[in-house]
Image (cartoon, rainbow, N blue to C red):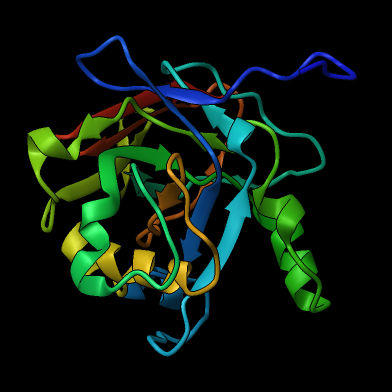
Length: 228
């Protein structure tokens, strides 16, 4: 095959304790998946219909790399989340079989241009530019489910400059990992290489240039970095 222009490098995440990389196909995210965060954002807790949005695959930042402060915002917010990586996909995946598709777990930040999001919401407009910008998805190395199983109750936390900002137990998610996969597969043909950011707890707040962050999914993954 001859390409008209040089193809871009494949976005890929290191797999912990191996020399392998996980190639990223798409990044799906779920909003308002912790009740305390939904209330914090002035929204109702709702299990009737999950809220999904996406980020481009090349929004990832790996290897604890520096994260550039994005343009066009004065209110960059952190949202710490458990990340799920799929080995296989499909459509209309049953909840009972959903975890069979999971390859690995990690921890990441869903970085958000909150001022742009608020402005879009106030006008009833889409808020893609608030979520899907460059370097908006820093993510840790991935730990394979074959090693750690499928976590149900682990501490998820974020420290900024040594101060605890966010903390929860992943068991507090409104939609479980299996339910998220099930709901996504009703909307999309899920594929190997898909990443899912599973929602953030309360405590979202602003980041500034020079801030250092440390996100942790207890016993599974740690992500560190700096806003530059």
